[in-house]
Amino acid sequence: MERYPTYRAYSAGGVVFRLKPPAALTGSANAASIEHVDGTQAERFPVKYSTVEHPQVEVALVGRSHSGMWALPKGTPQAGETIEQVALREVQEETGLQVRLISYIGLVSYTFIRDQVRYFKQVRHFLFEAIGGDVALHDAEYDRVAWFPIPEAIRLLTYQNEANILNQADGILQRWLQQRQVEGQV
Figure 1 (cartoon, one colour):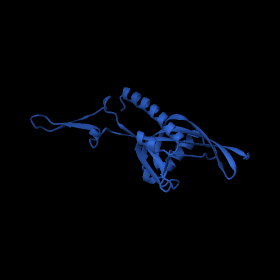
Figure 2 (figure 1 turned 90 degrees about the horizontal axis):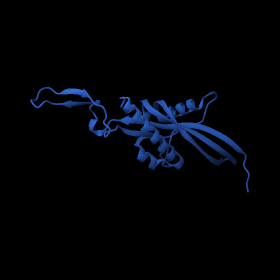
Figure 3 (figure 1 turned 135 degrees about the horizontal axis):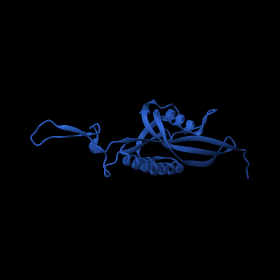
Figure 4 (figure 1 turned 120 degrees about the horizontal axis):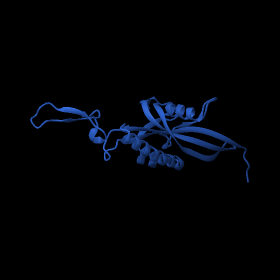
C-alpha cells in the first residue's frame, strides 16, 4: 500500500443566481398595459408577481469547452482573506459578475492525489445574487460562463457534490424568495 504525504486545502465559492421576470412580463419593464374598451389611451400600472407566476431563476456555471466540464465557481484564499471574501472574489473573477452575498449553503469535502501528494480539500459554498457585471468579463481560468435554469444546471454539473450544493441552494433560494414576496419585494 502506497503512502502519500497528506495536506489540507481550503477554498470557497458559490452559486450565483439571477431572477428573470415570468415570460408573460418579459419586455414590459415590470408593468402592464390595459386599454379601455372605448379605445382611450392605455394606462400603465406596476405588477407584483402572483403566487402562480414566480420569476424564473437562473444560475451561472463556469466551464471548459475542451473537456465539456461545468462547475460552480470557486478558488483558493489569498493571505488575510476571510472565507466569505474568498468566495466573493473568486465568484466575481470567474464569472465576470458583480454579486452580493445572500447566505451560506454548505461544505463539500473530497480527496485527490497530485504529484504524489494526497490532498484533503474542503470547499465552502455561498449563495450570491448577481447585481451587475457581465459573464463576458470572466477571467481566463474557464473559457465559458453561461446562465442555466436550475434543473438544467444540476444535470450539467460534472461533479455530483456540486449538484448536491445546487440542490441545497435551490431550497435556500426558494425560502428567500418566499420571504421577499411576503415583504412585497418580489
